Image (cartoon, rainbow, N blue to C red):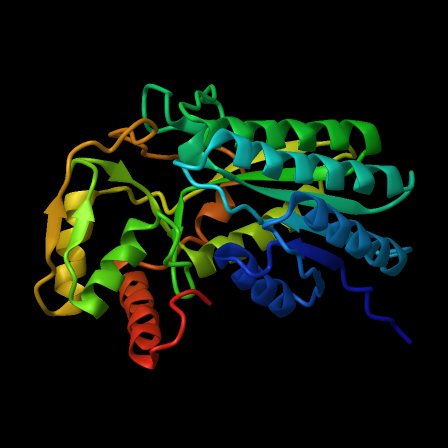
Length: 320
């Protein structure tokens, strides 16, 4: 009588965020057993304590079976102060160090880090940017992401854990936090739902890549599968994008068409450091992953707008 293989046990850090929440669903659909942690992210010490306790549980549960850790946490955005980002990097470094110390020589473990293509490539030239583009962050946010990527390389080298680093495009979709100063697409949806004009701080010619969150989650699951096939200690960096860049002007026009009503925007100068004109992305690694970015922009816009409108109409909190 044949036995079914033991499903991977996957710890998702940041399961309450946009990418993490959708990743949990995608992992469950792929028959992973998923473990999440409740983390008080506002306090560095308490965050570390909560995550170390979760790691203890994870260490006991994963013995003798394939496992994954997917780090999708991070409250930082382009404008976040350096000291706040340093605290995030410190938490990541401490927790990944504890993970490394717990890994046995024969364990079948892989890791995934959600990094930021925009943060890493903000100062680069010669778009579209891919995995061979030299990183050139302009602000602390991008430098923090690179510091976290360095930690991943160190852990892989020390333990033999295989790791994938996903440099994500602008991820959007239902459930995005609306209080954070990011996410032009979801802010367009919020402006439509509330009837308020939306200040636009960048040029209408600004080019960005918008990746629908369900596609992003499916792509991450595929990356976890692919990295497990690599030799021990391998780290693969992968740009995760839709491959369909659009200007901000086109995005606003598309939003007006999808909403079927006028949308008021107010162009405001002074985008500040870190907001560059052209952030087109491409990928030369694991090309089959790119085909999973299948949601057209109008469809993603429509689903995001319906989610935002429902939250506004309910009168409850705008953040999930």
